[in-house]
Length: 453
Image (cartoon, rainbow, N blue to C red; front, side):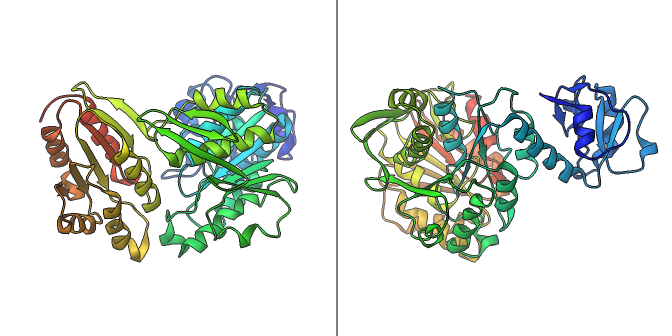
């Protein structure tokens, strides 16, 4: 890190003789504090100020503070701020402006994390690049990401999440992107935003802090975005399969590789599905915008590192292949992965475990039921998990197909795991997809232990 205690104190207009001591890191979890760190006592389930002694014991040298100064333990330098979260965000902006990386921002109802990973993979071929780690994509996670980028960072790739209107405005103004992209407008958080049109309007907030002449990449097949991009100052470019300013043709789909062409050049990505090619087009667009040559982009796309639980292939000890995609879900995303998984050539049978998609509002049952159109004769066994999946269970059992379907309530996860283990055979392939709140990651872990029921 490249910040001193004196710099931080000056930023917040503190009087006194503050040392030029360089801060090693900034942490809001006292358990992660190491020698030389700044502690940020955020308010959560418990107020972070309660953990000040633990932070000191672990090596903190300074802390933000918004309470009585007499409560600060001896040996710790307090920097008084009226609001700890706002100070955390303000420090992040200060640090970003000091390091001056180019900033790329990515949002969308689906594919944000994969697109972030692809983009970082491409840009890192030529620039010192840092990206959002895990799911640190909100008003706390994003400043944390910024403050953890290396001092020599040239490209900062920020994933921006939201579930209410106004949130992306805050994040965009914090990140101040040079280029941005919207992956897709789906149904995620429609319960809070009212409609897909409301979601589209909220996603466009990503340009609130973007540079006036920056780049904005949007899907060509999303009519809801077209009127919202007409009169903005950014350079708007579209992407899509077979059409758009940046377009690709898929030539081969395999379990762990998808091959496609852009303007006659062949590329491949180490993930399943044509829908991921759209994400790759965004990474390609960013690469070209920042001056990368085709071979460099090709190398980055072919070798990018995917965040855990995003369409991740796992090999269980019992010769079963698991496709884990359990971090989030909405009807668009679930339909796409069901389509791609169904088309795969596999040695054994194809099974799927589908859990509830959350925050879909009053049309939730209809949206769950609509997944029946994506479950073809290519599937052999379907496990449904959760109350909302009852609608799909009825739709599938009414459908005339040679398909075995099971349904489990959320309280019966242990029974679900036992039934899956009893059903699986060597060389089977199984897809798991649900909203993170359904906890299917636990099911994945249980299947990976390889023991029979």
